[in-house]
Length: 350
Image (cartoon, rainbow, N blue to C red):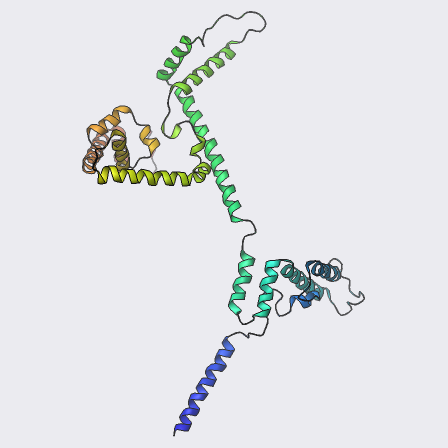
């Protein structure tokens, strides 16, 4: 009775091995779809595995001249059995073999596949990793991208700064102050010019406008998003100086923790402004653009304390709601949304 049971077990093992044999690719066969497929690249070019690069290149040139579609002619000596289609396929195979063997890394991977055919999936990975890898160094692409962004940043900031200067030169408050300073410095002395070299009124006016713009640039400290751009603020400099900024931040954080957490020291004005800005979630440039009396109000209200800032925030929201409630434009908007809405065609002027 034991013999039939043992026979059944052996049959099961045999069937499992046969099934695995069908599922697992043959370890002795070349892989179709990789490199030269089922052909050996060295045999395609007619060279040995010890062939040098010049020998491989020479063999490729000879076969390329022989099977190239522009040179192939039906009935050529030695190619009587070839058709244009078969010659084209052979040319592609020769080109693939040359592309595989001319590169040292690719040739190394191919030789490893010939010596270790059992590592089926690793050969697929090595082949497609090389085929799909970018031809350009990623570091160069990143560097060029960062430089392009930095140039765009710098010129856009200069454009914003010039727009701010042009706007301030039209504001009566700043224009009167700049004109008075220019007269005190003797830059707007309109002496009559005589002779052929005298300037026209338009030229004098343009010169005065330029003098006023220069005074506004030098005397008015523009803060916020329209401040004068600096090279150190662009992305490229930020990336280069990132280790310095990181070390500076770690040192600052360690000093902050030691002074105000461990030693329980009192906050100074700079520390209080930092906590207020963090509570308000404002950037440094946004906070710097605020008026001095606003900052003094923040200090008086002790807004560096989280609880007091929450109270201040609620007060500001309530005040904004009250202003919006009495604002006639907001009333018209609410009445329009209630009665008509954005989906209704209307010919009202407002």
